[in-house]
Image 1: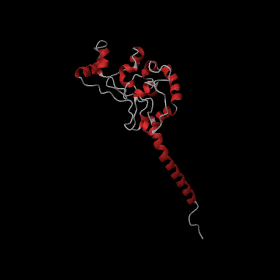
Image 2: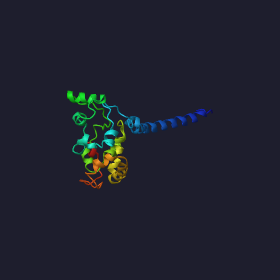
Image 3: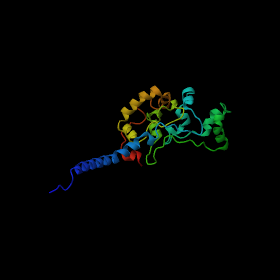
Image 4: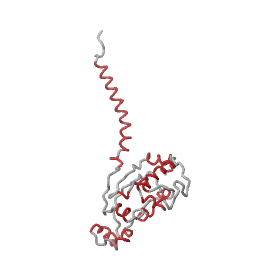
Length: 218
């Protein structure tokens, strides 16, 4: 009696089975890789702004502290975007005829805010309070990178859930490690945090491992 299936059918069946396993694994792994990939998180992509604001000049040359422009970072959930009046506090007297500052002057006199383009956009489903972090030893550079070295600001950290959880699971170790890097690469970090928590990570509040869902999803 002849075989029901030809010999080559075994090879076809094994190949089809292997393809099915690879496709199933790829269907699970591919989305996980995609959501973490820089082309999805938009990391390291410099964002154009309505004004050519160079942080290198303002922070390194003029030694302007982060909180001078982002003054809400230590008192509220949002760090805030500097109002045009903050810019004009200096530029009404310095470079007040510069063509590069025409959008600032137009915004100031028309009382229309500048339309800054967002660089760090945390999902609405996640809650983040800047003041809790800043006032308890977390430097700006820990999440935003060494902004004082950027001509145009770009996103350094992914701000994915994994990024936050790594710090929340081991706050002491993570912050101490980042403290050394921050002080080496960011003069703005010391100015921002030094007065608030000079003996980091000892601040005004004990650091706890907040890894419950309701800590970030409310």
